[in-house]
Length: 260
Ligand code: BV8
Ligand code: ZN
View (cartoon, rainbow, N blue to C red):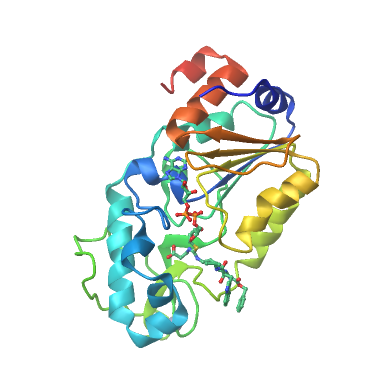
């Protein structure tokens, strides 16, 4: 895959780089994406049947069991070269903002800090009744079988059922995270959109806000991404192959070779 010189120039001169990631950045760590055929989580489970308050109210142990299965997958997974390249990028640019739609902790485990989680996290359960975060962190997940029911733990404050600390469909995104994300989109010079289908709102607006504010937007995705001409690019390929190449080309430092 050839990396357009326009992308390299924009990255080298950027004062503020925004990296915006979706499920595709964790795909090579073995975490199923939402919409890819076959492996896609939604291929087997309808989001309306699981990622909503109504689903939890209707069958809390089925929904909790599904999230524990996903938490186990993340627990067993390792950050991949894409996560590590993004962490390395932050040491090579003046300012980097990392916004993820993902609920896993693979960016943090690759060394990224101050990650903005627009859709929450698997590791910070809240109470379904009083909405407060769980008093105790969750123990390492045991080996739940996909689709098995697990009784949710109880809230240490009010005794209500704990729910996953993620943003479900029909729920508002965390106000501060969303405001920070829109502000970063307006301020950045380059936005790298990595592994997202751009389907889910309002997160899907972020690359568009950046482009309209004058940033260079680069989509990194094996699937075709339509581009609007000047200042927008599509780098075809998997994140773990494209990002290390982009860093090596952009910064040509010995330490980048470390990533290979
Ligand atoms: C909201 C956490 C205001 C949970 C997620 C009716 C009622 C209410 C709202 C709506 C409605 N109709 C529409 C909406 C808006 C709705 C929405 O956008 N729906 C979509 C389906 C149309 N949004 C909401 O509900 C949001 N809230 O609007 O609040 C409100 C409030 C009250 C009432 C009304 C409105 C909340 C959205 C958050 C939902 N939670 N996750 C969980 O994880 O279980 S979203 C979930 O899907 C993920 O978090 C992820 O963010 C999201 C998007 O998926 P992607 O990350 O893009 O992944 P995907 O599989 O789609 O694509 C992967 C990509 O990677 C592909 O392009 C693929 O080619 C690429 N790829 C694959 N391999 C690689 C790769 N790329 C690079 N390298 C590789 N190796
Ligand atoms: Zn409670």
